[in-house]
Image (cartoon, rainbow, N blue to C red; front, top):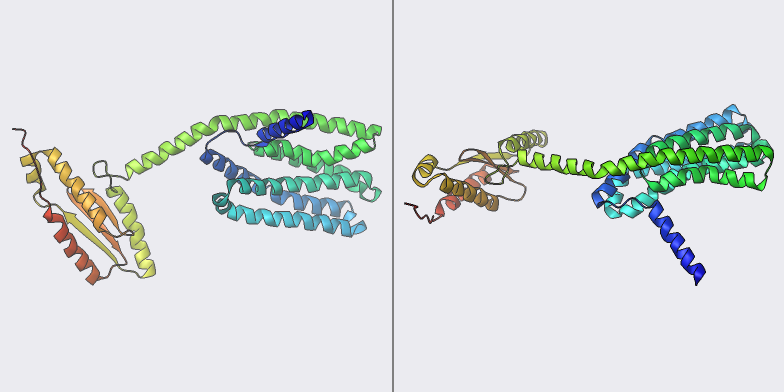
Length: 342
């Protein structure tokens, strides 16, 4: 019973340690995309490094099967890495957890391959020429990876483990003076990387809420700049941008596009007689009616004052005339109830 409790506590603690910090779903997704983007180019460093080491040290000639096997493994992982890069967002929509797991497997998988290569080189006389080169490359790649990818705790802790863990186990199996010295140097380097990468992780997640808030505010300001404050439909700026795109698409695809201007007659007289508050209600009512009349792909906006603009996609001239007559029949049939304050 006691062993079960200890095991459960250990597993729970490890999960909390390797999981992303408590944050909103959008922040976690943003962090996942950020890590993937930072790690993408780094994936292409492993294969050239290995090919260069194997050729320059002569291992490609003395142990061609071994060199080809490592080259094939690295190539397969890099190929999957490219596939993940172009399908990450789709995979996130399906499952954020699966997307993160796939990224961790591929990122740490490259490091594990290099760690195993270093371990084999340390204990195989035929591969000994590549040992120091591989260890140096592992150190450089681990340092670079932890310095930019430590926003994900699993990579921060996993990178040195997969790269140097096999090597340290190999040194422990043969505790010579050289192996003990190298083990101490590796452990000191790993401890230093843990200390420095922690700041990278904390800086990112401490600033993530502020970054998300600024992003939401920017999106809100953009929506406000493109929406008419009174009628809550697109404004003139929005209409200009939308119609520019629709016009280009219409010319490119050869599809008809109809643009209509809807104007409220004698609107100034309404404002003068009943007041601007009543005039505002008229504008809101017209906007709401236009929104209910037009089809889903069509577009309506307040162009200015009492003028509205309606864009009908893929609408022939005959269809446009029918739509215009339909608007004329629908808009003037309201009966207004107004109580004078006088």
